[in-house]
Every structure is written in structure tokens, then in C-alpha cells.
Image (cartoon, rainbow, N blue to C red; front, top):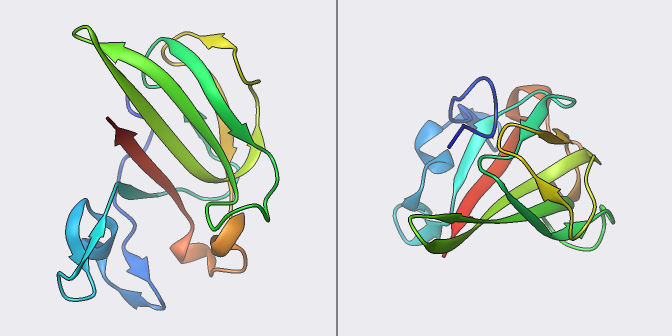
Length: 133
């Protein structure tokens, strides 16, 4: 399995201040009261995002206003005979279609600031990334 980005670092800034923990997984938001389902990875808009495993594109949302996640992709893949779903959000450009089979490492999108990330300062630009069961 490969990482979704070439440069893997949690987003350091959130809501105008340095707060790297809020970008991690688990009960890390609102003083530990709210769970964060994935990782917010630093990514300048236009950075390539890659398929983390061989799989099939299960869902593509190209409407930046449909949800808070903006443009997003769901990649279905298997590891050790179990099904998982990788979720990539706030994308600027999607390079795959629903139902397309993709190899691990294929560029599938470019990061962006769609959805509720629109207008964030560049230092807060990020790729929300989740692995769902």
C-alpha cells in the first residue's frame, strides 16, 4: 500500500492557529469531545493524490457544492481479504470515473479547496483522507 500523497504531514494550522492535533485521527476536536474520522494532510492545491491500493472507484462527486467535503472520491480496495474504502476530499480535479479499476500508485485527483475548505488560507490547505470499514 502506498500513501495518498508524496509528502505526508498532518496539517499544522486549523481555524487560523497552529493546531496539528486537530488534524489527527480520533477524539481530537472540541477538547476531545468530537471524533475526527481521518487525517488532514498538508497539500497545496494542485498536488497529485494517488490510489493507495489496487481497487475500484466506487463513488465520484464532482459537484463542489453538494457537501462540506466538496469534490471527493471513494476508492474500494481489499487488504488481507477484507474490504475497505479510501476517502479523498476537498479535491480540485478528479481524474477517474465511477467504476474505473485503478492500480496502486495511479494519480486519481488533484487536491484543492472545494466544499467547506473554499477560501481557507493556503497554509490551511489540506487533503482530508480516511480509510473506512
